[in-house]
Amino acid sequence: MPDTFYTELDEGRFASSAWTTGPWDAGSQHGGPPSALLARAVERHRPRADMVVARVTVEILRPVPVGELVVGAELLRPGRSVELLGASLVADGTEVARATAWRVLRTQAHTVPDRHAQPPPLPETGGFVPPAGWVDGYLSAVEWRDSRGGFLEPGPAATWTRLRYPLVDGEEPTGLQRVMAVADSGNGISGELDLRRWLFINPELTVHLHREPEGEWVCLDGMTTISRGGVGLATSVLSDLAGPVGVGAQSLFVTARV
Image (cartoon, rainbow, N blue to C red; front, side, top):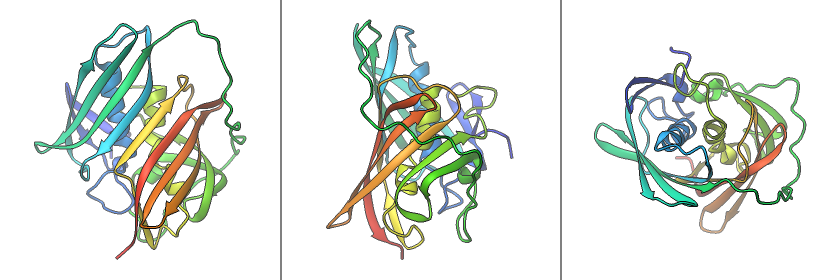
């Protein structure tokens, strides 16, 4: 298996490795790597050093297969101060995911500190071994260090994460790509019901950033709310070692496993 999530075959065309595989189906990807790949496409489309990405929303239209993918991006709304970009992920001629992203002009505005709590200290050790019945791939391609809670403990959780492999072969992931690769796990670490008995399906992921993430480590400090009718909302404060960088949110369809 290559030591990367994706190998670029030619411009905009990628081969997915088994490291992208989600825990429930050996043929389908976890939502993290495709979200990061879409973010990469956004960053590389008409890049502007005077702008920073402030929000990315990923719509997961159908399961993303572990196979060849085609990625494209476009400028949806140009502007001097704000721009809206779009990106699309296609497998076998079918669009499987899409993203929109706002980027905003850098200014000399005054800094106001983030009012979210600071992340817990990075544990010296950690690790997660997928239980029997879970498909390994993505879960072993990310280093997990739980500060509070975790995948198999119902309730809020704070977990530090680090990608073990680059998103695309031969490239150092950007801070945005690192965040997008793990933000989709907020619902997994903070599930209020037993993951072995319940599904928490998120058809979308939205990440708001107030500064550019730095370094390899990303902390998810997540919590999940589930209301009558099976609708849930998972939210995560996203941090690097210097403190909070933004917030992630996922709408959830909650149902018992068959």
